[in-house]
Image 1 (cartoon, rainbow, N blue to C red):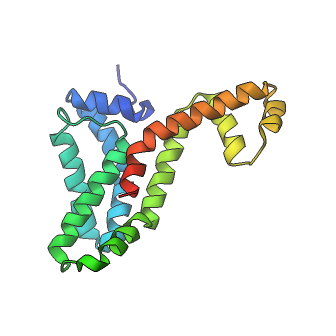
Image 2 (cartoon, rainbow, N blue to C red):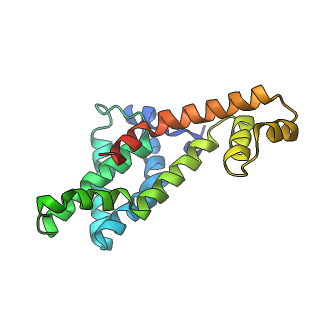
Length: 185
């Protein structure tokens, strides 16, 4: 029996990888390498250095697969990439004076690639919601429809609309808690 790992949620892939499943790791690699590369390249402006960062991050993920607890794979990889970029920059760029450090940190937080990574990760999380929950959330957030309009459109109660939106927001909060904590440093 051949398993289609592309259908697995990140949590399942992490669980399988922690049990030495090479195919699960390969799927994580395929799913995230480009986003990690974009994050690294945007800060380093070097293809070779960005590739080194991605290689270091993904190699470290595999090496620490049994002892690392990963609650949110996108947040974990974004954090690991950021540290790897900082490490790479510290090797090639003179130290930043202490009085300009907050601005340097803010520049990284506002990075367009980081925003792109977050948007892509959010889209993946939304895809994993139950269909009706996802549709209600999209109508509410992307189309700007009111709960009453959504209820009418989908022929469900306004209370059901509220429950679906709450469920989607709770899932997103849990999945991105670590990532948002990272952005607020």
